[in-house]
Image 1 (cartoon, one colour):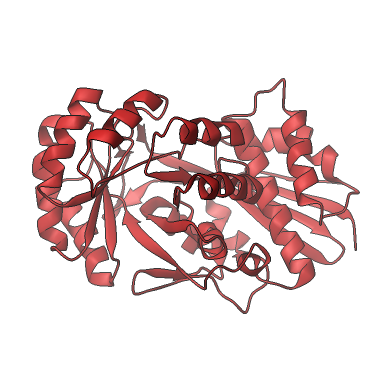
Image 2 (cartoon, rainbow, N blue to C red):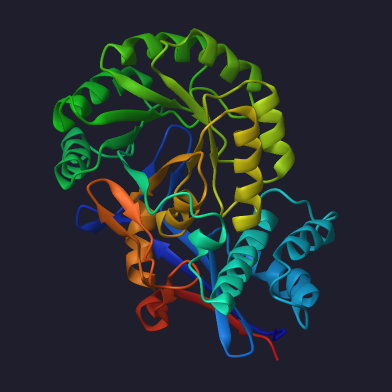
Length: 372
């Protein structure tokens, strides 16, 4: 087996763009006008693995100076050892946050490299639970007008997606009317999810859960802060029985997911491979959920999570997030096929199936670095 010999590292900044113009987006607690992308390509012999993460561009410095020296010259098959070695090396930097994004990009590249060296699809290498996974359209930002909200969510319903999600919480006084508009736009046969991004107080969240139930909202994401495990448990216990309380997208370490599950805080556990330690971290989170009898949901990055969702039996859906769908279609070939609301990773391609298109991404390039 060839050893790891080279790393190519690129960072990009992609302005947000929707409805024909560059414009900021907002949710219940944040506003953003661009997305940072870290692309890591790791080579062993004649084979290169591709990893990426949506993260602050500072993550590239951590990869270059802290993580890469731990990998060069080592066996690319030892993905578990590499994951825990990287986690140990960032003790004094702090694992959560930007550092976790750096580890995630590298770990994804290592798993892709391993699968390509073995000439198998990543979803088969990780277990091959199924050939596809349910996708739900995700956008509906609070910065959108009602007509834009209706156009986006209604368009996904017409496209065949079986569920869509919208943002709420930045203007609570408008939330009920916006959810009513969304329900009217998608009809009664498409599931409607809402995401407050932790904007509500506990009492607000309980009140809205009852009102949203009248509109058949079946998914209430981060009704209160994901750091408020007792609050999440309160909403989970008192919300209507058919309403799923979901959280976990800000989990960076295996311990985070353990604590959330131990608190009984969610009906569905979310994890994001671009934050939680790449493929290794996502698999560890899914295993904890499986042991607790809690289903998993993959947060954003659908081109990657299609493989993880197809691989693991307790992943019930993947977030088909507007910003990331746009970027992944620009940056990569081999995008999973969306058909009748299901994402299918390409079975004829080894690894996660994605190939980088550097020329298409070049106009967004910020930095590049190659190992010597």
